[in-house]
Image (cartoon, rainbow, N blue to C red):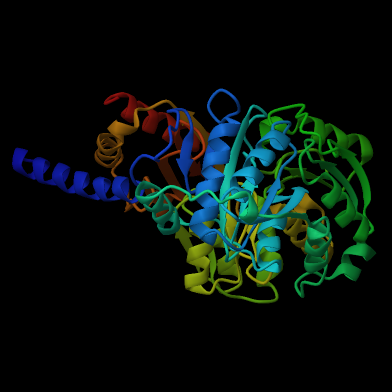
Length: 488
């Protein structure tokens, strides 16, 4: 390549990468001090409690949110996961909302998808989930919900921040302080909605008499999941069901963290193992032999259960395994990919009128229920698929092509991301490129791809690669990491 041609290609690369970088910019600084180690994105306002995410900060942000969505009137729904910091932050959030005249409906400890359904049930102006999802126990976050019962998307989040920059919340006098009521029926309503779904045949699942092992890691989903499995008449062996926030392990439901569940499956001779994350929006599976099968298969098996009855578009994110493409193709359906982030997938699902979707982290979204990830929904769909097919989990997985996906986190300066993306484009010579969300490079002829993007929940850059075997995926991750390190 000549010097001029190389310069032109580099310039084009920088233009594409700058567009990606700009699309991730959510606006200027907030009018309150946000510590540098607090993550602010559509995935929430997230940090380590007391170190950076303090009750004072949380209360002030809640006041801003209440005034933004309700203009000093209306209702906001508040709920939390089981983290030990939850009660303190809940009091701060409720006080902040009441201080601007907003009425509060408090749910207590509930799965995140339960809160989103409750926003719609109460016709509320919005909601706040106090949860850091899969992050370790010392973390917590505010996740902001619109009156649609969906998380704020990028446009809404930008509007929120723009509003904050123009004016602060108007605190009300004592005569206009918002009220607070409790709703303890939110998750029973949610449970009934799942059992009423046409794509879930409760009687068929009951007739299968499944032995199920469960690990809810002492998160918010314990009581809900136990009741759901009881309604399916499953025989249940369980650990971590008390929602006390005392996480006995890293709470993210990835294979490396599921050894206790795998042992429980083997000891009890269970048909399947279910691992739920702390706010019950993600599900990971363990097969009948005690082998974790990867979170991507949660979406694949759930999608098969839906598409077998209602073929139609499927939406997932750019980091999800291509096995979802295989499933969709088997039912004559097409897959669309959106940027990583639940709300990004949900918005694309609305646009494509998708019948099912989700993310490869074990999050399943069913528009017939609502536009959010839901572990309890995924439990129902996976058990439905097994009951319909009359097969073991390992047999259900073996029906589809096998791929290996490898995920790594690396420290990398975000200000150098543009140059990093360019180095990857130039060094890897991919068959296809997608810069809508970081950089995704793919080799369809080899059934291989790599996705590099900054995390929205941790101060790291994620490298995800998939190939037909683990060696190929690891080599691709290593090569991408080396290219990034060369310009860091």
